[in-house]
Image (cartoon, rainbow, N blue to C red):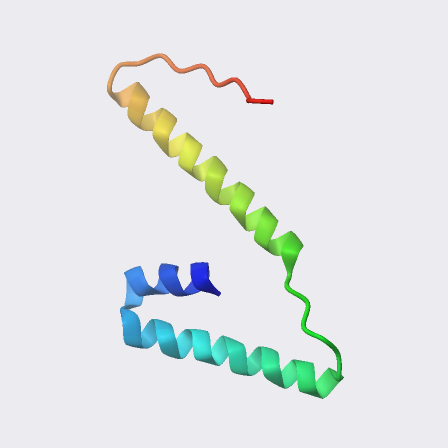
Length: 78
């Protein structure tokens, strides 16, 4: 939720971001009560989004370095 709020905060402002987060919490609460089951954080989606964000950041940084005239070779760290 924190990342969702921060993304919206930049794009929409604090009031709209708060309303959107509230809406998301209300919807989650509704389905938890309707289905009578415990809330499970969607870890796979969070991990997938995090990997995608990191990959995008790497590509952006590599692009910036190339624009500055550097040759870039990426090697993964163990």
